[in-house]
Image (cartoon, one colour):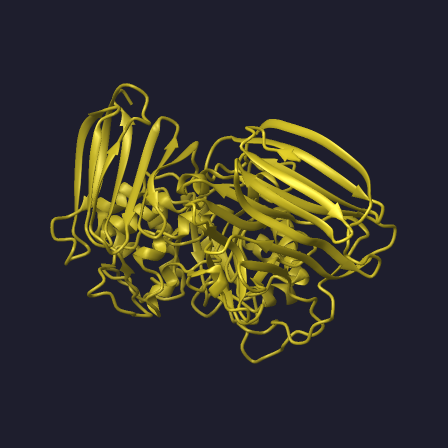
Amino acid sequence: MLLSPDKKLSVEIESSRQGVTVKMMKEADLLLSLSDIGIVTDQTTGALLQIKKAERSAVNEIVKPVIREKSEAYRNEYNELALTFRSGQTLTFRLFNEGLAYRFSTAFKDSLTIFRETLDIQFREGDSIRFQSEKSFNSAYEQPYEFKKLSELDPDKLCNLPVLIEKQSGKFLMITEADLYHYPGLWVKSSGGSQITATHPRYPKTLKKTNNPYSTGQVGETHDYIARVAGKRSYPWRIFAVADREEGLISNNMVYLLASPTELKDVSWIRPGVVMFDWWAKNNIFGVDFKAGVNTETAKYFIDFCAEKGFRYFLFDDGWSPKSDLLHTVPGLNMPEVTAYAKTKGVDVMLWVIWNTLKEQWDEAFDQFERWGIKGIKMDFMNRDDQQMVEFYEAVAGKAAEKKMVVDFHGAYKPCGLSRKYPNVLTREALIEFEQSGVSDNDNPRHHNLLPYIRMFTGAMDYIPATMRNANKNNFRHCWDYPMGWGTRAHSMALFIILSSPMTMLPDSPSDYNRENECTGFLTKIPVEWDETKLLAGKIGQYTVLARRSGTVWHIGAITNDDQRTIELSTDFLKPGRYNIEIIEDGINAATAATDYKLSRRQISAGEILKLAMAPGGGWLARITPENK
């Protein structure tokens, strides 16, 4: 038996001839059962039979993250039980107040070939699951979230993590992993009834070569094993987090706490910030006397805007170089001139790269970037999480850190704690984000009210919020070259606060933001690092009211789905006193003209009730400052 520090969660662990089984309870409520826990290798059978040693320990400490994605400090408190088996394997359990995690360790002299890792997870009949699915392990991790009874889950579908279980009792169980290194990512699939089982992509034997640089490097044939590893090592943590309500999904920090601490000696150069990028916006600049495009003049225009508004980065996205060559720029773009100009303005320049091209030109590309003065890369189109690709992520993070560059992963699997080991990894995709508004209806207000409770659980996400091109359900349409966002102006801006990312990208052109200077001025005051995060109100898929504090200043973001909604919000989270509040809310005509908003300023007292009136697909956001500041 293992108890959580607050004694509300308990875990029963049993080892028998059938292997190790686990039951996790919250008081008298059985939350889940785990069985067939094992690793099948060329030196083990998978079954864990005779226990050689059992060791218990407890930890209660404060961890201060290098990058304050959610908070300035996390409490790391758990009780641990490590079971060492005669087979040479150790199974370690950690029980937090917020959930259970376990991991394997092996202590073999020779290297291991791992054929599969086994795990069955059983729930109660009637429990439901929210998930993204694929037909194969080749995935951009950008599918819409589905919601089904576990018993209705298609056994032919592969579900990438995280997956969220909703118990009939109203409790939530999040399944994901942390500390993923030199090993493939964990997926799950139905094994019948209310049971799901673990599965992994196999180790690649061949990679596809095509004439399309975006798809080159995907897996062709595979071996019959999932990994080849050192015999002495630890494996990823399997996480089963528990939340009574939505608030517990926002406040949970298990992914970060279970990740390896940073090995970087100097982190002073890592700078979070806002990014302007040219991909959506480059052909939509107006009011200038040059031809917009991927060229030196356009880049300087973006850099001037970043400098004026205090934004940290300008990113050259797809199109700055030939697809198969990162050493040269396209005609009309003088990279040394651009980076030298940016340096005089206090702006850092980033480059988008296709992963496979970077791999082929590894040393030459990084050296060229360093000569140019590039401060970050956005790597794209990996679309895999087999062992080879997981190793490549870490190699990129390490090489970028060596060159003092920050990293944004697109076409990426979910965060698993890499940003703790390498704090220069500031954000990643692994979600449907604003870019999909150009081609589908998937990026909608309901989806926005799923992201904080599912994808954001695992770490920072590059959603790209705060478009000034706003539409509602009745007039939203797809436009690849000039996309709009589904939701009101206040809704779109509130996403900047609600969705965590220490590197937050803005999608529109400087011309758009200059035209909407009042809203842009509000955005420039919103930080990307936070000392405290609180969910003030929320219902998954319906509405979200999230508050974040930086120093003594609070920012609140609120959004609703396509239902009109009014929320009465207490400000009792504020310290006693008087405050100045600046609000952007839906205008009186926002239900028909999504760009309609109202800016107001007044004073409030701590504890005062605020009335948040939101149109369908609407939003509300505020900046609250102590009166004497």
